[in-house]
Image (cartoon, rainbow, N blue to C red; front, side):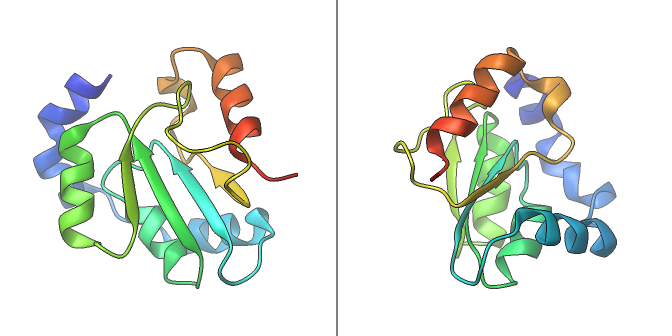
Length: 124
């Protein structure tokens, strides 16, 4: 899937923005406190990642597309951006307080493996 998103990465933000209502709901559902470390799997250009980081969370965005991450890091250097997939999250075990995957599950190659990886990187 990275090839497809590498191709559309340059114009992605022209038509996609974080919906404030969805960002509010995601924040509520994360159930974490200020300064908590959170992961956005399939972050793309970081629209929701940044919207949530602005609420005092330490976010890491993970995406397979180098172009999408390039765009995200240029616009938002305060967030940590890493290339990876749901099935191989490039983070240490038990390093995150929360995780989300906004509109990305249909891109995961192996849903079960992705869920195992999310569980691995989350703190109990």
